[in-house]
Length: 246
Ligand SMILES: C[S@@+](CC[C@H](N)C(=O)[O-])C[C@H]1O[C@@H](n2cnc3c(N)ncnc32)[C@H](O)[C@@H]1O
Image (cartoon, rainbow, N blue to C red; front, side, top):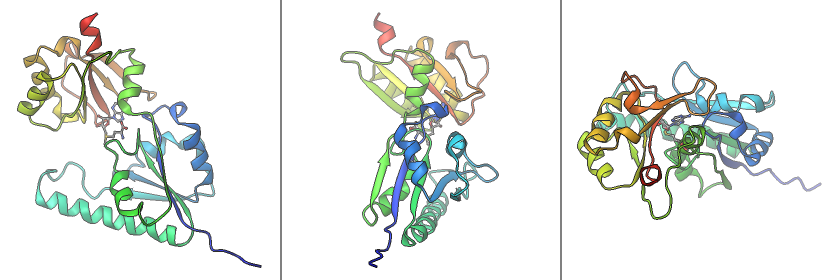
């Protein structure tokens, strides 16, 4: 009998922003096919993506948690951070590749869409030219959040700018001043700075704050009405362009 060795296969699986019903049929199919399911997580947690796919978990999976060695302890622009995180991604590639070499189908979970600010990308760029690879898109956090809150974001010739809240107040202000609509990601401890930039550009009144969008414990409020500056990592600010012109 001619038994051909099974070839390892990599699948980047977008899980959507939180509600398991926002997973695509393709994502569910990939989870059925996976031998190994890898996911990024902070120490002491399984991470959001693994939580989202919970209803589809299988006993046959080998689970491969990839635990970040640091999160906010070292500044992200420092040489130390870059070095530690580069080593982490290389070590993660090594762990995933061992399973691929054994002919396994490895699904790497990515919250939202894998190729939109997702850690999956760091593995994808190191593995996709060596192994058969498929990327399954996911509903992004911003899309989940503007749908949940019924916030029409852009229309016609509107320009939408996506900004990481980690930018300086100067840079946030400059970019906001030059767009019709914006999505500000990575809010967390950056909220006071984001609020100031929105105030300076006259956009605060139409900004909508959403935390844990589409998850069971989500909440949202007009940012101008939010009394405190507390925000979890999974929060976003939407600045609609279209609503402004109605
Ligand atoms: C590393 S990015 C991941 C983006 C993701 N790949 C996507 O497609 O939206 C993480 C940031 O996305 C935003 N985010 C992700 N999920 C969210 C959710 N359910 N609700 C609000 N913001 C979310 C937050 O701003 C968070 O800091």
